Amino acid sequence: MHSPQLCFGNVHHSRLRPARNRFNYGVFFLRLPLRSMEGCTMLTSLLSRNRFNLLSFHDRDHGDGKQALLPWIDNILKLEGIADADGEIWLQTFPRVLGYVFNPVSFWFCHRRDGALRAVLCEVSNTFGERHCYLLDRHAPIADGETLTARKVFHVSPFCRVEGSYRFQFKRNQRISGEITLARIDYHDADGPLLLTSITGSSRPLNDRTIVHALARFPLMTFMVIARIHWQALKLWLKRVPFHRKPSLPLKELSK
Image (cartoon, rainbow, N blue to C red; front, side, top):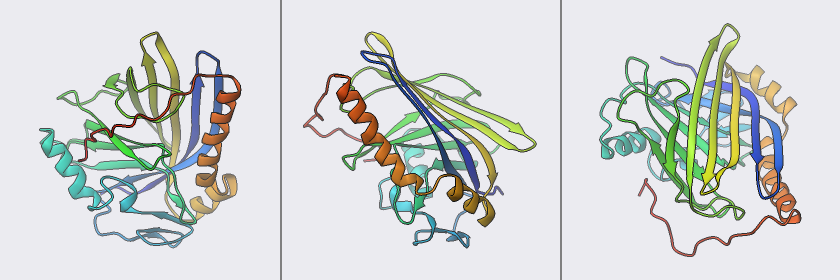
């Protein structure tokens, strides 16, 4: 059995061209062991599942927004021919703060029973209320730090075309103070690297004390996520980075 974690870390983003733009923000996020949490609704007195609290986590914020999370992800893995991801599934995501959340990307780390990482589902959301999943599967366990790729098919930013590919890397380092994690996503177009992004975190036990500490350091964090997205968009517009309208044709999602 595994216990939920609250992680403190940073989101880093660098745009390389045609104008350089860089930011680095402190954040906190959840790492939730979905199989170990099966049937659990109250994680702490300050964090609830599928009900309002100071912090909360709602199943409908992920997957297809309708099914319970474990049946949904297990069905996705089955449909993709992955039969050995029968160990723990860790969902890394932002919690709701006072009922509000926007998750630019959440990660589902799907493990085998022996603990090896078998596949990763990257769940990407845009500000139009749409969600798309990229399943990273190399038909074998994924090594720590291994580079995985996916073709970009989903509109996220109006300052990037729907073309090119993503390169993903995931690293874990166990220390006495807790686990250190890194999720890196670099976006390449026909001219090479364009965006370099990452989220790092240092895990702590999920309890009321760490929640109070998180909110003291980063009050109203999820509200700031969406505010910062629009602030960075304004900066790119002022730097005259080309603007690309959202494609009018709907894109087929993995989850449908």
